[in-house]
Image 1 (spheres, one colour):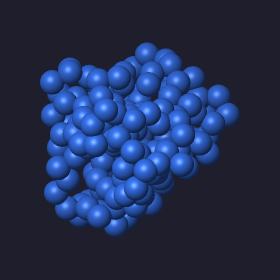
Image 2 (cartoon, helix red, strand yellow):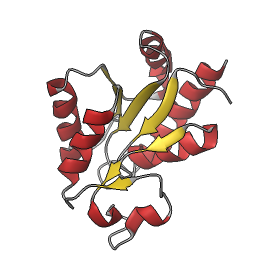
Image 3 (tube, one colour):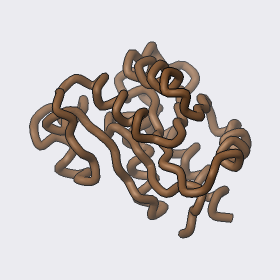
Image 4 (tube, helix red, strand yellow):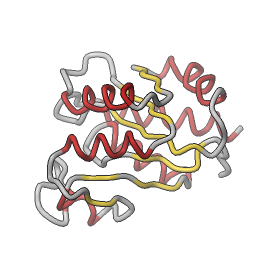
Length: 163
């Protein structure tokens, strides 16, 4: 599938939205990359090599602090899509990402559900082709449906871009 608008999906690999972005990128043949904490830590991969065992496309940060992962992914992205499903609990990591994106003055869009796919497509259309898109949002412990909702949104977006 040729999705020229997005050259790569960048994410930190945490459960929830990040993981949905990684799986959707693989499904649609979009290059996957990103920074993850030292030892590949994620809440469902607490021990080394962590999520790097199943997602070797990611690179470790020197620190095991999740903020460094988030900040580096924002820094290295061309644009940032944040998916915060309705009903999500407070997400400190998502807040770090939103603040970092604003400080870096990156193009950013925050959405909450599938009904916003046309808005996402219009936003992406306003950006140059071949962008590195960072996708983030709450982890599974902050929103149990984050993976499913983000996966549904991203599949619809990628299908819309491929048309």
